[in-house]
Length: 221
Image 1: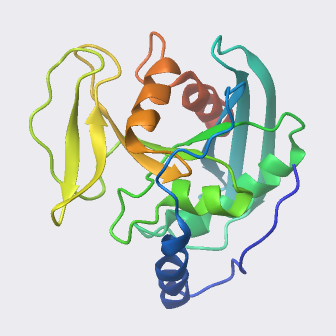
Image 2: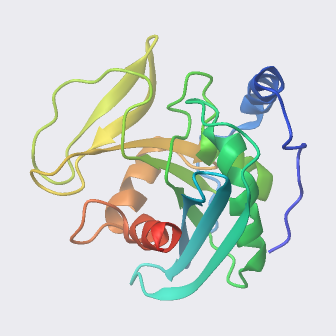
């Protein structure tokens, strides 16, 4: 997979913020997917050596049967500090290294993190989607920004995630009576379509199979 780098990665926080503010205007939150979707991918991160080494994992699955087709791992030195709201600058360099290794190009990527459900509407799913020019979804395990109403406990239930009067995503129950996930558009996909694909990629676990497999690879010792 060939990747065009949009900017440098050795940045100050102020430089990173300016990149987010500039690139967020390029994010597309309408459906621009290749149909039919045949391959979905999950990307996730782990860290080694007290956080000094980033370990990125990619898992590509066939869709809709969710059979594992290909995986890749990449390691590189961590060059950006852990700062909420700026995780893409810490994580994407290694993710891009892992994506460059795969031969099966996914039609859709599910990211372990936020899409537009982000203070500057430019989470890791948006950032990655713009760089690789593929549809992406933010599938986060925790809330970063926004508020929502109480959620029914049944699978498939969701409530809008609202920030400053804007719907930036949903809180989605992917398994009955299990903690929900926070779903938002990354790039080239609408929120309703993102919800649909997350549920179709989720079987008997809380996480979509894409994310679950990538998470296991990224965190393996």
